[in-house]
Image 1 (cartoon, rainbow, N blue to C red):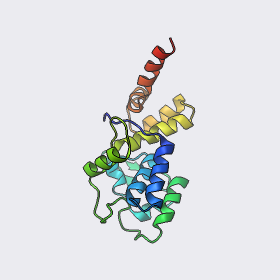
Image 2: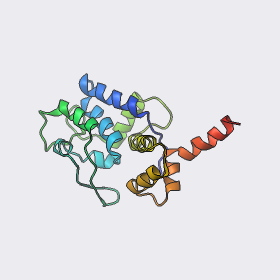
Image 3: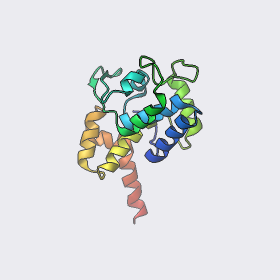
Length: 177
């Protein structure tokens, strides 16, 4: 398990759209939007094509586990893709401004450059997805159960640790004394 942390969903969503709209770094912006809205690993995000993101659902086989996955393309991704309408549907969606594939190492440098905080990496996008699901579902055990399944974790306890939930709860105990 990685030591990366999650980002504030709304701030990351806003920053991703800013990169897209301003033409500063649209493909990196699309990575942010897709990462926090799909919850896929970076290796799977880098395989997505423009055509994949124009479909209602994406059919992929996870690179790490070999398991099939069918995430839904939500409104946040559809809004982002509105800016990529002239792109070739067969081209990789997440690529550098020179149209070369991003390396994970380069993406991690960009994440550290554009997002402040400790332990920021491309994996922070996946954790941000998890935290958003947990928060939207009122921090319920059901949300942890869904996320545990989505992340292929062996237990909900592992999912709690992965999302940093347990550490926050322990911290709150001391604060509330």
